[in-house]
Length: 335
Image 1: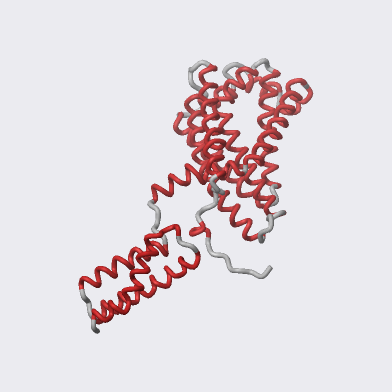
Image 2: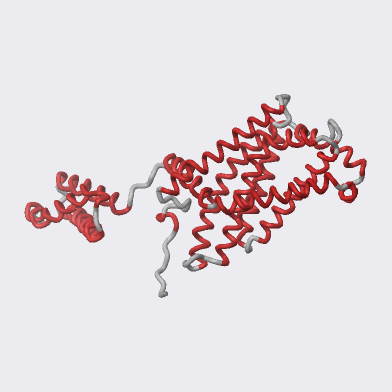
């Protein structure tokens, strides 16, 4: 093969490919199609040259051109650290922000139910008598009783791991089981709201309401918020089964399911923080105001993460779903 003739025959195509590569993201649809075609031709030319006339200068030039074109066509993979940073800085807070109405309403209903139940239990001795025997209630509510010693019942590290695991399973159940029309999520919420309301009512009736809230608040603010986010997102997933919103039910469930996975991963981190607070701060000898202050700061940090970073990411178009490159392909369908 005459190398000079070959170069002269295809130089215009290589120059055009180089020009398109310089335009980068500014390419329009037809130009992007042209880029793909010219990339395929250049790759063929490189193969021909390597097989029939391996001129080192021409091989090096075409190899560089083909490599640049391949990166433009297929996209260069992002480093792992960048993907992780994007997840925590954009996708996760945006996913939580998009679900804010669901878990905000969940929080309101949960707290109202717990509050009403606590007031009813505290004011009604007959109800207290149906909950447990008087000796058991005294063992729980007395100074140094079961409620207080629970938070120092084991080594702090082991207790934190146990609490973290239990809460992570609870949140995962609320997230995943939402697909069953949200019914299991409602049952999980009702059981936990009842447990909280009954415990609060018994402690208040024993005149130890301050102790109850002093122990619950440091870790409970962040822990309950994580549960609300999980439950609200699970209920939203259940609603997608009922109303997929103009998409096929499979497409809608796939998109929301990927968001659920993202939120589940994020809540593991949130619950780790609340578990550490529950193990190390709640039973500590710090003044009650200091312990509650730490819990409030953790809660405010989480809310700022969602409503500042999440809102900005959502306004920039972030949905919380994975990149389209990882979401899978969809076959076209006839409407």
